[in-house]
Image 1 (cartoon, one colour):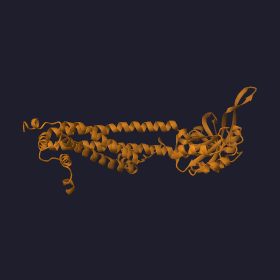
Image 2 (cartoon, one colour):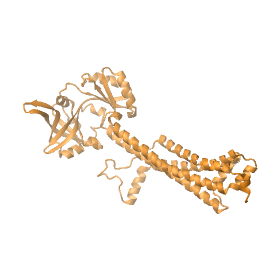
Image 3 (cartoon, one colour):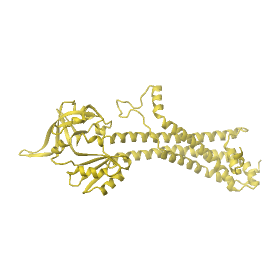
Image 4 (spheres, helix red, strand yellow):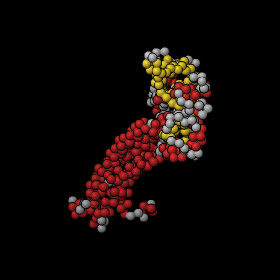
Length: 421
């Protein structure tokens, strides 16, 4: 209480107007409208925090699954092959961000099994080196990734690709490459039979349905090259991949082409960012509607308090002080609503892994069926910069909503306001 008494009178009057009035029905109604505005701001803020956290969670989950197969950075020699890949790998590891390297060669082809044809990306790797840059060996559900042996022409398929080809372990598939052979009958595609020795599941349909692994030596023979096409690198912090790619291009010897994972999936990440921006704008409109309810609340307050305003003006209060009183009242409603919304939104976002299963159990439904979706739980990734941005936007909108009613209160003429009192 002593703190309140030491405040300037504008703050004390604004705080008093914000509190619920009990002496008249009109004051109580105005306070009720203030509570509705406060609740609306809080609900909008909480909804925006939860929705963005869930979108961030899905983005993180999909990105993690993508990068369990993709490398953080890929390095190619401009000549098309990298015969001294061990030296290049040693040069790359001099960068403190690089924690793993592995050579590879990659091509596209058609996998054939009886009457079924499926396009696929064929990646040649060294089974002993591949765990340094990807998790595909851990994701092999059936068979063994280490069964890829040079000259054996074995292959590891994505689970959806194997299902589409109707092939199991130990069975044969035929790889047809576009680089054909010239014969008297014309150009025909080169064919090679492979034995399925493993089936992996990355949890991302793009890779599970269109990616296959063979031994690097077999891939080199298929592509008719005598060395790997390049290196795949894993970093300590995948978010630094664009910067590290530039550093590697400057530090590594030779004429190299370096690209990071964000460039490989630029369209997907651009679509996700656009969706997040649109969702932010749409949900911000909810906060804006609630914030501008403050306009009607403050207009009603100014109408009801015209006699008080006139008396304050007669006692020497300046129009600036009157304006400050009602801006303080509106700002307090906005700040309290934002604080409640932030607290509620953060609480829900941090416990969504408990709340969603409880609602599913209560209603007897499953929002993300395992039979349809690869991600069967609702993930959440709360990011404090997003929370700060949302809270700031809500407070600013609430403050803007107080300007017109406060200016109107400051323009009240004492004589006219007291004429009928």
